[in-house]
Image 1 (cartoon, one colour):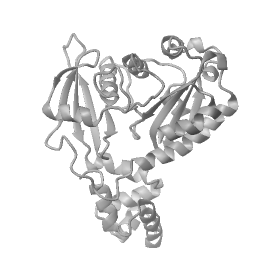
Image 2 (tube, one colour; image 1 turned 180 degrees about the vertical axis):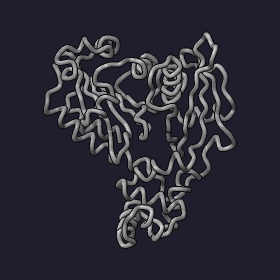
Image 3 (cartoon, helix red, strand yellow; image 1 turned 45 degrees about the vertical axis):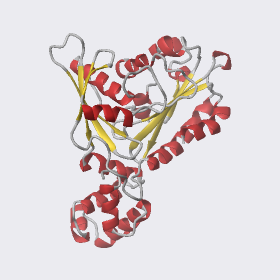
Length: 330
């Protein structure tokens, strides 16, 4: 999907390189990277800046602004050198302006992208930023649909026998790795090769733990990431106390229903009310109980159910429950 979007947007946005990411839809934290233009030879620095730098036009700030796209030239009012990201990454790599977009849909952030252009192209135009904003809305919907559970349950995923545990050093290189973790590293490998020794999701989790240990605010203590078979995993990271080397322990476990089901319901494009109805169904409530809990009539509940079934591609409550319970957790 990202490569098809590249084909459609490159000429109209007039960029020379792009870096695509998927994200944990619940937190917006980046959990994969794809770029056919950039070498990503110093990607650990990009991760560090993303977690530690209080910069302009970051993905979280763009998301909080209510827009889906922003440029460095606009955010800095024509003074991109005011951005640490521009000084340490964009300019040294030979680029001028940067256009960032966030792919929000159905209450979650499913991915994001950074579009870079050569200095001689000048700053991005207002119409290009607006076009990117519109495109990001459609990309968010398409990307969320990619994360819905498949019609038939996939085979059991890896690391089903217990948590995957690893200790990462200060540069996020593995110091100690459990057997399940070795398998999981391969399952969650980034689409593009980077200078990181682990997938970006692990590095982001580790840097977040170090930031928390330093007493700085962090958005979340865990990152969700989906493997190529549609299974969700949750990464928890914690800095080791008394460690002089900045070691961090990362524990990855298969997502529980509480972690995964809200993501699947959002991926189907359900409204907030439809998600509430669907969650009560999963908990075993019948129509009357749903109506009582949500203070609506049984007829209204039935209308919501029809919409839920249509969006999820099922014909009954049993099929819906089987799809979201087994489609990604089996």
